[in-house]
Image (cartoon, rainbow, N blue to C red; front, top):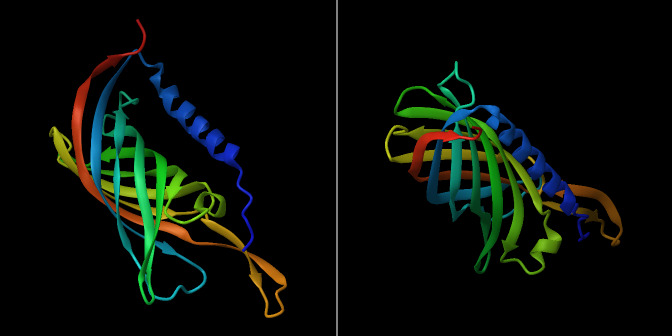
Length: 216
């Protein structure tokens, strides 16, 4: 298997760009902002070009902190949501024994939230992640450190202190780069494969919901 060439600076640069773009909305004197903590479970798997035998989903976790703000005075149903979270994804394979492949990510979702009512809102955006640990030996050197996925979600009971959420993340970037080897041991085509898919559900607790003044 070919050791993938991992550009660590790429993930750092993308994180910095997204953070800067999000913070650019803080040009208003006041924003109605909400800070919350959240925790829940993940039901994750991978999609692949080759067929993995006996592949099954696995259960993981998600937890973190979110910052939701309303930068558009004329469009109060629209808000932006930045989060910093720990996310566990992976999959299983059953042979003589059950083998679990676990990947722990530090993720930075950037979402647009649209309120359908005081109780229900829908979300869409991107999730940028960097791999921080795995149970696979030499996994941090074997698997790509950077991951990105599209996110669709729904929040329930938005106006309450405690609310619920559900999201689906569809990975866009291959986790693994390797070469196909023929019967003579020669390297053939380079293959980019294995992309995360993840369904998350959980509970969010609002800990701050007031006007935040950024400028005097």
